[in-house]
Length: 290
Ligand code: C2E
Ligand code: CA
Ligand code: CA
Ligand code: CA
Image (cartoon, rainbow, N blue to C red):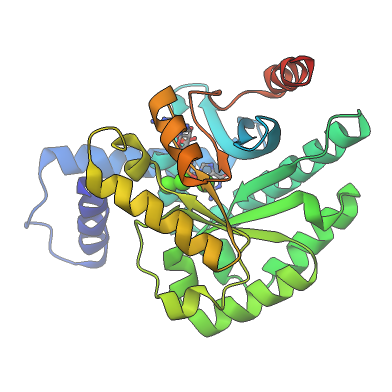
């Protein structure tokens, strides 16, 4: 929240002409870093500074890996590793997220095709979408073109949206979701429960999965409200014909509760952190060996 407040302040700052109010040295350096990162992002793609890590998603029915989520990593020669939570909002503000998002989609889809060709057990590749991408009129064409160029059937791709993205303009979102769904692309709602979505819309969204936010999963052990929310989301999803995946699962206790409530899948450090390609391949081998 404080980061968002900073960004909001920065926006105010940029759009105002007088320099005197609310501009502390801290904010000065904060906006200086934003500017530096924004410039650095520009070269990041051409210099190959980005890569994807893949986090396993595990079926709670049989313990198999049924998917991975692609998560971007940025290793800058000078700034070191920059967290996506820091640079994605900057890239969204500058519009650079479109080029970065295209790279993410192409890389993830190409990787999944390579894994299938190499004989890896079929699974779903989940890719995070930015609001900016979701609002862009060419998204559908881009997704279909990328799949076609990689030779990957659409059912292996899942796009992660947020409630805010869907609720910003529900009519347009529903139309786009319908088109993606018709093409066979899966959709999920990320960070479910933290946003603001109306149940009457939710049933119109062509979404196959709700991702239960890690903030609810974290306190399953000692917060009965969070337990109630998680149970309610699982039941809601089930009655809407959707699946559920719990994010940020770290302990056997959390896992036991989720399994008991009928959650379909889980993802988190308990199973594995997000892994580079070679380590994900090694992980997949240990899974099939068991
Ligand atoms: P997200 O989509 O909600 O991703 C889940 C985040 O939780 C990831 O952080 C992941 O590394 C972390 N995580 C996974 N398991 C655990 C766990 O057991 N415990 C804890 N504490 N954390 C766990 P990451 O990779 O730093 O990504 C942060 C956010 O940045 C993502 O949140 C997503 O909103 C955004 N992001 C990452 N990659 C992309 C991308 O390629 N495109 C877009 N548009 N956004 C991305
Ligand atoms: Ca996600
Ligand atoms: Ca999430
Ligand atoms: Ca998130």
